[in-house]
Length: 188
Image (cartoon, rainbow, N blue to C red; front, side, top):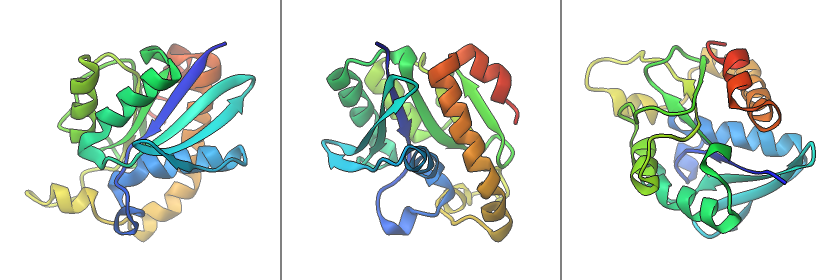
């Protein structure tokens, strides 16, 4: 039976909970809630286990802070014996318009420190990633403040629809595979 690891990237702590950088946490929270499960704190993160159409799905929110996410990802892949192609990393992306989904099988870290650490720990840039566009509406030099800033009212309103669409994309990854998911959800 196939096992999957779904990883939402973010930073732990209340001060980060509603920031753009924590969209990975927000999306996996919605996924876990949809299956009436909850997270438990375990080694290197909060873990939830789901059954999605008979498949075992381990959902991880690393508690290592964003820039050290690779340690938690590698640990849980090894502990649960989950193949890299069955691992999906969900993160924010400044280079994509707000709310737009881009799913890829490989690529660069694109300046994202969480992805950079994962690539270093896995010794590869070939792993499925789900980038959620947060846009780039910030003045020069204010990138960090922007990603660590909270959603504005318009964005929060749009997330009511965008987060469930993101959950459907994750379910598609698990049930229909990466290629079908990319075809159906990329650019949406």
